[in-house]
Length: 308
Ligand code: ASP
Image (cartoon, rainbow, N blue to C red; front, top):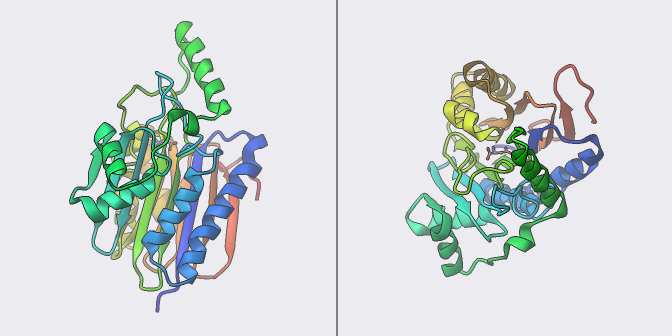
């Protein structure tokens, strides 16, 4: 019988050291929430949805409450979930006023007969199935308002700031039946244009899951990530015989070498081994693999000192 495994991430980016403890605590709680379900015999889908919801509800991360603001000062959310048993997926893009887009993505997958809904249509679907809608104000935190003002001032002075958020959240799990699922949720990148869709809700880019190989969830600069299908590239690497860690390293190398992209990813193989890689200053990750020990780390880029 397969031993359950779970890995979650809270984004890869230039996470200020003063915020490291919040990221680590948020990843730990999300991990524990998902793990509890796996221990009780619930599905990998339940575990990744619950772990990601936990981080959507945590204002530390760029997902759900706490998301970055776009160039109009609004929040538009992207999310997806994928079931590796049947290669089913659900996703939402550029949706407004939803606290838990990962749950909307799952309901779309299971109930709508479609894979992806965007914008107002996604919000209407959420209302129709009784998910709680919320105002922009409920999702907006002072940290992001301050960041928005900085971008506005930079735009007025025609100065370019890096359009990067990188605190997207994600999870990949395997349950006791060997089913693998992956989920990713994000507010996207700061000061993005309204209607912009990143990698997170795009199958194979922001996430991928296939029981026959493994699963992955990505974070980083979506415009680059989607050009190399980062998550599918990683699971294909696992299918070709690489370990989860080798696959994460390989996918990241392709991101860097082919499109000069910045970001990170988590990978889980069908034996429950995990791996992760990033080329940003930091990446926050929590996991438990086949050896049965939980880890939480703020991984520093090679050559820098991390907070373990
Ligand atoms: N990948 C996300 C996007 O481009 C951003 C992030 O990872 O924080 O929308």
